[in-house]
Image 1: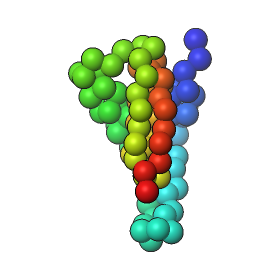
Image 2 (image 1 turned 90 degrees about the vertical axis):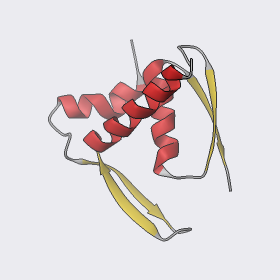
Image 3 (image 1 turned 180 degrees about the horizontal axis):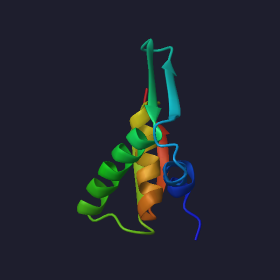
Length: 93
């Protein structure tokens, strides 16, 4: 079975790259720059996946994400993939 979250995050941690940079965030709108490791991404994605499951979201359900282009939007997309939910993203702002 193919899982986007596994391919984007988990397999890199399994291959010993958990402390390597996974994401470079650079927002010209807020003048914010940040980096996130694979371990940090997995932690955030796992938390969000747990929240989605706690709210009754399951494999095959559709989740609409209305957020600006921030790392949390990506975490939410990966969390949906992790549990098998389908996401539809609308960038706010």
